[in-house]
Length: 340
Image (tube, rainbow, N blue to C red; front, side):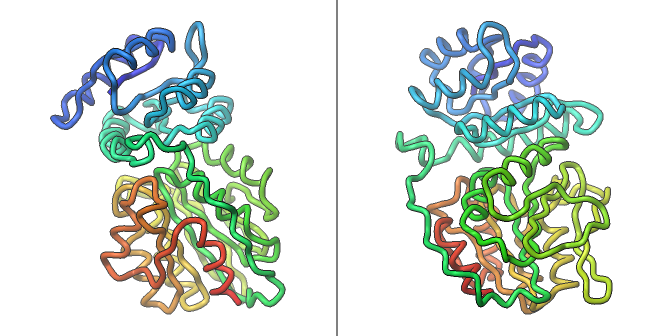
């Protein structure tokens, strides 16, 4: 792998931490995209870690050029700030497979290294890059049935995703009508980044999409994204569902955790819920999806072919948690059918 960052300290820390894993070889580092370009040609790395702000050429411009002429898995490692997060979300649009925050008070170096090692190994196996295919599968948008007959009373839809999930979630939400039941989403993403992600989705979807606030009502037509570095759980008061956003330990190395959301949905919504587990590495949400199924919910897992990383869905399917396994482009219709 290649590390591209203008900070000599960051390059050294990442090199030392990642090289300690026997499955990873850091073949080089670069302080700007021009040096990175030459090293990519010379060393042929499997994965690139890319910063956003660098001299001579910014990371976003470099990423766009790279994806056009020499596509390979790129993980954005960026500072925790609102401005940086807006740019990092744009990087996902351009083809980056994931974004992580540089170490600060919220994410220690050891936490970042542990996550990076797992992600690097997972994204290095993405088939679309190995086969030289398109950055994004050219699957025609599904024709989603009219929602006029949806039985949305007391319904809740819960979605969990990790690596590759930002585009998968968008591909699902843009196909859905405005009269959907409340939708709760956990996407593994750092603090601040989730607000930018929600705003991006809100700009392209018929549904209202926003980062969840503590004690917020789960209302029809609204999609609530779990804030980065916080868990999101469903609660019920009388006939109303509402959200709690809270601190808590990492679950499957994650906060927010899909597992935490799914278990709360199983408890408070039961048979009135639909659970969807999408692309991502690891096991987060697999057991929680089984809890939802056992509570009477309808459950869907993304299939291997359309997953960027077939980790979380694979674990859920192996547990028998998924009542339906579907390609990404078919999930919106499966969801509408389950609600009708």
